[in-house]
Image 1 (cartoon, rainbow, N blue to C red):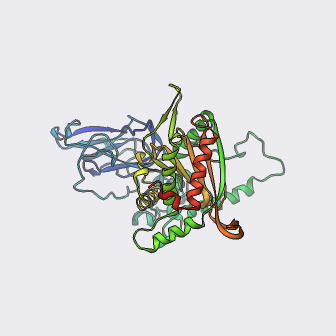
Image 2: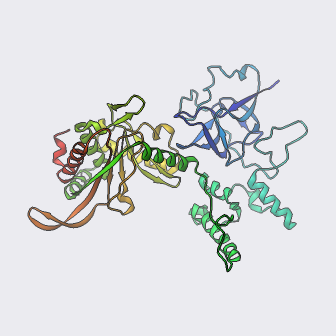
Image 3: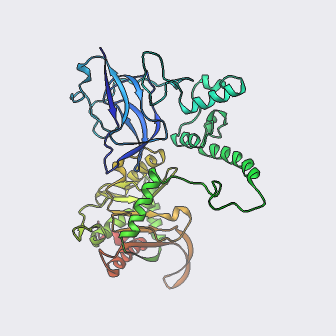
Length: 454
C-alpha cells in the first residue's frame, strides 16, 4: 500500500517566517523524484525553489499561487511506493531544505511538468476516489469561464501549450491584475511576453475605466477610487522594515567630497589592455574600500544595543546595492578584503546576474558588514543613503563625468566623481569618518597610494 506523506514549508533560515507561492512546478498526479523542486516561493530575501524530500506521486497541493504560507504549513502530500521508502528521517533523503542549502542527493531524473489542462484539480484539494476536486487553476478557470459566457470554447493556445512567458514575476503581475496572458502579443524575442507588455495591457484597460469614472465633482477622500493600495510584502516589505529600523535606531551622519578620478580610469584602462578578465570600476572602488576599512576598522562594525557594545568585525563582507525588477537588493561579497580586483569583478558580475534572474539565495543577501552604493548608474551625482542595518556605514559613489578642475595649477577638464560616506555616529566621530573618506578619495585620485596597502 502506498503511504501518503505530508511535506511542509521548511524553515527558510535568517529569521524568515513566511513565503509567498509564486509558481507551482508540479501538478496533482505528477511523479516527483527525491529533491526535485516542486514550488517556487518568494521570501523577503529572495525567490527560491523548494525541493521535496520524498519521491512519489503528488496527491494534493495546498495554497494557490499568490498566497502566503507560514513556515510549517503543509505544501503538498506525496504517495510513496512502500512504507520503507517513506521513512522521513532516513539518510536517503535530504530533509526539508531549500535547493543549495544542504541537499544531499543529486536528482538522477527529472520529469518535465506539463501545464495542467482545463479542469485540473485545484492546488489546495486532495484527490479522492470519487474523482478530481471541483475547480481549476486560476488562469485556466478564468479562460474557461470566458469561453462559457460567450458560448465558445477555450482559446486554441490553451491546448497548444504554455504561453511564452519566462519570468515568474510577469506571471504574478498578470495574475494579480486579472490579465489573460494568452490574449497578449509579446514584444520580446520569438514573441516572449515581457513585463512592459502586461503593463501596456493594464494601461489600456485603465484608460476607458478612468474616462467613465470621471465626473464633475471631486472624488471623496474615503472612496474606493481615491488611490491604489499596494501590499508591503516580500522584498518591498522587507526593505521598508529594514530602512525604517535603520532610521529609528541609527543616528547617522553624512560627509562627502569631490575627487578627480581621471587617474583611476586610466589605471583601469591599462589593466584591461593587458588581457584577461575585465576589471570593473566597482571592483577598484571595492578594493579601495577594503584598504580603507583596514585603516579605519571602526566603520566595519555593528552596535549591540542590548549589551551597549560596539562589535568590530574581523572580515569585510561587502554588500553592494543592485536594482532589479523585484526591487532593490544588496548581494554580499564574502571576505572582500582577501580578494583581488579581478576576483571582485567576477563576484560582482555573478551576483548581479543572479539578482536580475531572481536566483539569489538568502545566504547571498545576508551577513554584510559594509555597503558600497554606486548610485552613479542612475545618472546622479550625490545622495545621502540610509545605512543598511545593522551595518555601521555605507560609501556612496556618484557618476564619473567630465568637469572643470584645477589640475597642477591650471584649469582643466577632468573625470570627477562625488564620494559620500554615511556612518553611524555611535561607532565613531567625524574625524574617523573624514579620515576614511579622505583616504578613499586619495586612492581614487592617485591609485599608487593604494599600493602601500597591498
